[in-house]
Length: 185
Image (cartoon, rainbow, N blue to C red):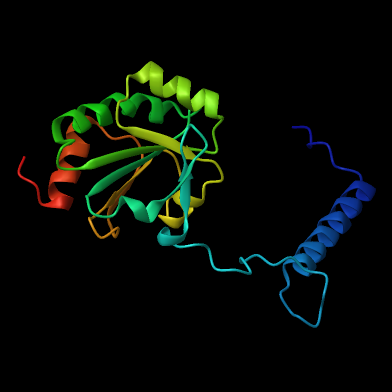
């Protein structure tokens, strides 16, 4: 049986030295010791805005504060035209909106999406509930969403009562809404 080929010693030494340099450089960059200035701050220096401080943008360019939704339980769905599960769930959200729209408000927010692409998606899916833009993702962040699609339920006081990340069927959304808002099915 032939022995496997060996790597040249020079190559082993060079790769070890490079790995060591990379490890030291990474430590130096991530080190948060204020006495050691070259570093990267990994936590935000400011508090992220809360739900009362953020606004979404209508397709006409008007800024609307999220806090104006108070008074009615609201389903907020975050989507993007490039998100396949988002596109797939929009007709299901429309179905629940048609069934419960008089008791619950619905809002779809296109996150960091082009206005024209988001508008075309809304038209293509036949959505009739209110839709707008979250151009910088600030509303999604304020409501502690991470991935798309995310659906957040706000009670009449504007408090988050439920949050779901991932695609929802009409049945799943209806159950979530009825349970979270204590509605009769």
